[in-house]
Length: 264
Image (cartoon, rainbow, N blue to C red; front, side, top):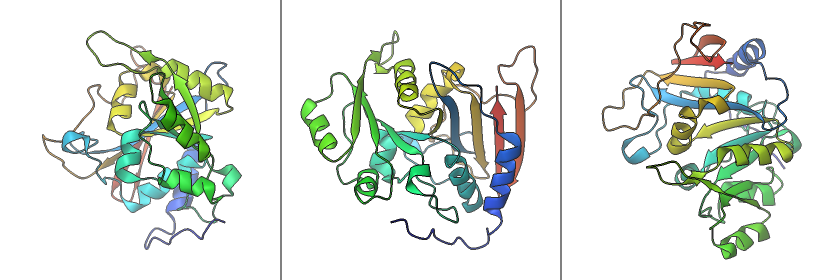
């Protein structure tokens, strides 16, 4: 059973603000026969860093924008992170900050990119599913991942999908985004929210043709030169129809954070 979501002092209106902002500004693209609508979202510092040294996870978002993120999750069928986020943060990938709590069948399905199947069997994603508090986790791994690790995860209810690796010259192989998105679409996920971590964000910022909406929370925090920032720049806040791939931009503030939404 789901528990009552925790109360966060001072942001009783944050959920209403998030609901109104997203309802007014976020639109989902027409159904694509090959892949879901992709919303990429992350927080960055004022100096453009999304992680600390060595891609260490940082707590950048304020409490109001965290509620906005949970409201955004509730509008998607699936929510994706990389294995680094699972290992470092042990996330639940649910919408527990919303009130009233969502029924389990209305929660986004957790999706993990995990090339070598390093997902711990003690993770909250697996535990929540076993206890009836979360959706079935879906893990994408490399075709070369250890079959015994797959068997162990499947015994706990995890769905594991093997995909081929894409190899770009001069770069290490990565899971093929096109194959992953096609499979997610076949599995019924039409709206996919991707949250990170740093390697996943960096990969998608280099493949922005796969991103339909980009929502960035900018925190008034400076990380410094040792922090990790992705190689591709954010789109301009001034849309030029002749040169931009983005059709619109909207922004607002949640507490101390600046939130910008670009859409195609």
